[in-house]
Amino acid sequence: MCLDRGEQQDEVAACKPYLIRQIQLVQPKILLVLGAPALKTV
Image (cartoon, rainbow, N blue to C red):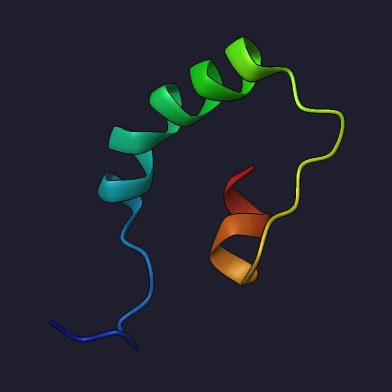
């Protein structure tokens, strides 16, 4: 496993619908994203 390889677009595309749905269900008051990939994705 290489931790420096960065996110792959197909990985982001596969996970994003689940992430968006979880955010909708939880309805957080604050969403804290850590790191550039998370910031770009959400």
